[in-house]
Image 1 (cartoon, rainbow, N blue to C red):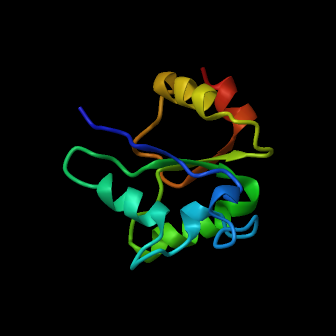
Image 2 (cartoon, helix red, strand yellow):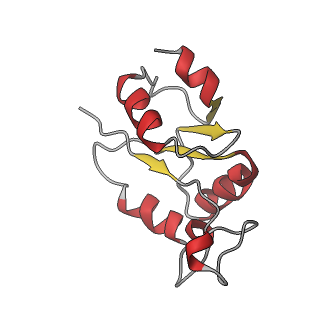
Image 3 (cartoon, rainbow, N blue to C red):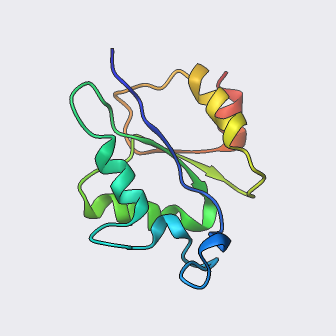
Length: 118
């Protein structure tokens, strides 16, 4: 059985102001060698663990993909939230039921598309 990590990396990062801003939220900040997102992806790497599924805001997708490319950890799937609405619980429930094809790499879904899969 493979573990499919789901990394929720949305949010505007207002709690870490002035370091984090809307243009660069806390999960994408480098507070050491790696960003918080990169540290999370590196921890979720190993035997019987597939590439991560990421949930992020539309405006951060390119930053999220770039940061994971830097650490050679391409995402399995990116689910894009067009608008942040505190959707983490709903997305997590949907993903737990979603049939992810482990042979399909680097897919991109919007929340509406992901919801229609179940």
